[in-house]
Structures are given as C-alpha cells and as structure tokens.
Length: 129
Image 1 (cartoon, rainbow, N blue to C red):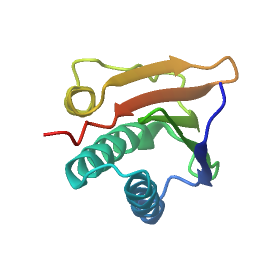
Image 2 (spheres, one colour; image 1 turned 180 degrees about the vertical axis):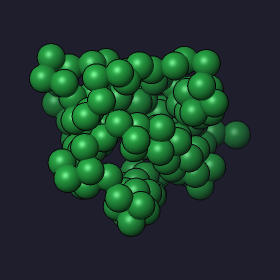
Image 3 (cartoon, rainbow, N blue to C red; image 1 turned 180 degrees about the horizontal axis):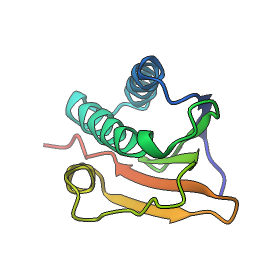
Image 4 (cartoon, rainbow, N blue to C red; image 1 turned 45 degrees about the vertical axis):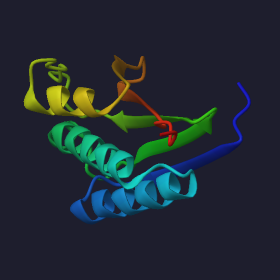
C-alpha cells in the first residue's frame, strides 16, 4: 500500500498529550480537507478510545499513533502497551458505541507482544451538493 500522506507520533498517555494528539489530529484532518464536523467526530472518537485505554496503559511507556491518508480515507492506528493482563474490549461500553457511531470502521486487536492495536477508518464525506 503506497500512502501519499502520513503522520507518526509517539506520546506518553498523559492528559496534556491527549490534548496534543487532538491538536495534531485537527491539523492533519484540516490539511486533508476534512470538514469541521468530520474533524470533531474524529477528535471525539480518539478521545473516547484513549480515555477507555488509559487505565490499562503503562504510564511510562509511549503509545504510537499513526495516520495514513489514501483516496480520501483516513486510516488511524493506536498501538499501546497494555500493563494489565485483564484488559478486554467491551463492545457494549459507551466508549465503543460512541466511537463506532462516529467512524466508518473500528477494530481492536491484541498483539503478540502484549500491545493493543486500535484501527480506525474515517472516510471523507463528499462535498458535492
């Protein structure tokens, strides 16, 4: 897969870094010509997901955040080391319901090394009439 546009960021899971991530997401989405509603939907979905994962993240280990844009589709990944072996994704949780309603695709996968991978897809809406 050849990507024309991408951003890769590593941040520790602090409240200030979640704000920074929202700012980066806003800037990247605006540069990619997403409208304000689409940018807000992405920011809310990302915030919900990170806040859900935060209690399970290792506070001193950074999580990785990747954006890829291809054909008006923004693909986003969060790769985070999980410190609690008891973590399970609850698809009935309010976070999952809210994030899923704002995204075109939302997938959670556990990696072999104990990290957790969240894949999100947001397709740019057409600006036609």
